Image 1 (cartoon, rainbow, N blue to C red):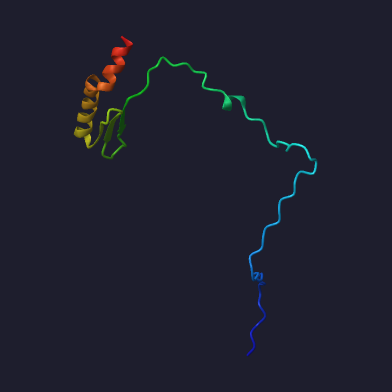
Image 2: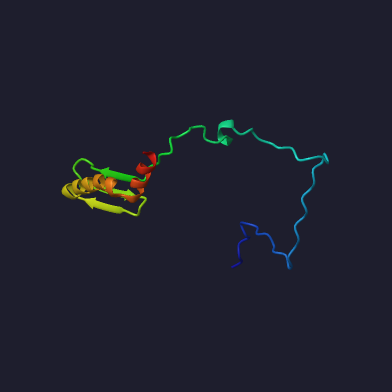
Length: 115
């Protein structure tokens, strides 16, 4: 039996590496032309909103899907990161998060500066 002719032709690899051809320079001899749309001015301007200096330092996330176990997460920039699952534990964490707002050293500094 003879082998059937190949159905695909594969390129032959060169015996040695070849160098790439250099890119052609601009035909006009001048500066390169910028192609594209101009950026929206709102994208390059700084934020125009002026705040009152306050920023969030603590977050309370509560998830209570219907028919599922409720969860709560309390996170603060002072390093507090607590999680609770279950109705009673989530309620306790919510109360503790509220109490933490009066004890947090970061919040005390922020309120003292505003007074």
